Figure 1: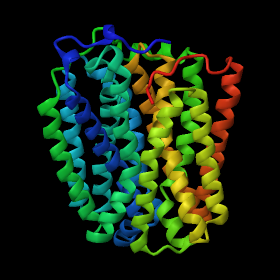
Figure 2: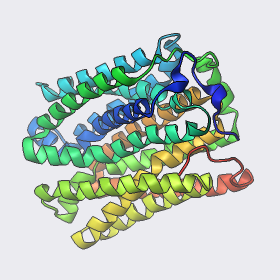
Figure 3: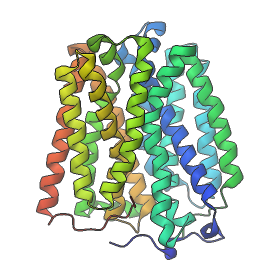
Figure 4: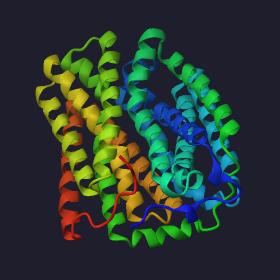
Length: 406
């Protein structure tokens, strides 16, 4: 497979865009994904104030995931000839409204409405913004630009939880969303200021590209892996804070520090995942599943001791950071000439799996205790590594070239 070339570039000057536009997209992706996972570090506070269970509070993660799954394909279906710059600006506007609604909500129902708006923003933005690297920086810089945009997703995935926990402990959970509101307004202004006009690509067929994608065995294997690993990850990760407080006995005031270590490890995992994916897509996915699965398995077995729980949580963060870039590198490598469609399918399936995982985790937590969610996560991650290892061997091994740089 070939990496995207200059022929994939957008017209009307988008190809001459500066790296500032790429960085703005990465920052926007960071803001969106950080907000998506902000409640994870705040679940005990939210549940306590609103008088609901932690499993019910987990709907704040479930709903955005499910709505993003719907929004991803609908975005390419209905975006039509809308300039992508203004489309992305509108989606960031939904992010602002979502954070304001949650910060000032008077009821849990209104909170969930705000999170629905977030799901629409995440699904649409990740679909369009995540595929713009080759358009803004065609040729030899295309893969580097895509990796930089994706780094915003990866860092946001691991940074949202510790940021929420720290802000919640210092100022309360509503203030955490208030800060997120201010950040999202700044990101909206930045993006509109630096992003060039981006008319719809003439090569895009919208939803008509998706049936062709699903005929590709490597895409189908990737989708199976996405479902397994994201369901397991978010069945367990959504409830990491209750586990560390209830089972490990970590004080709420120290929780933010542990989750910050998780986030820092996740940033390093993003680098490691990119390095592995640039050499072996099969190896990157198998390694990601093994790091996730073994760290969570050992955490649930040894997590009653903080001496074990803290380092294992940090290793879990390393695996979590590897996940988005390893998974998206696989999908881009499987169909590099249909980037918007690939991104839409990836976002849709991943977000549905995130929402389903958080929902499933909430059910097992409410019925069997918080440790059961971690058992589920460990099993799913190890199953992912096995499926990829066996599936790629049946297809002849790592038969296509990575499209992302280290």
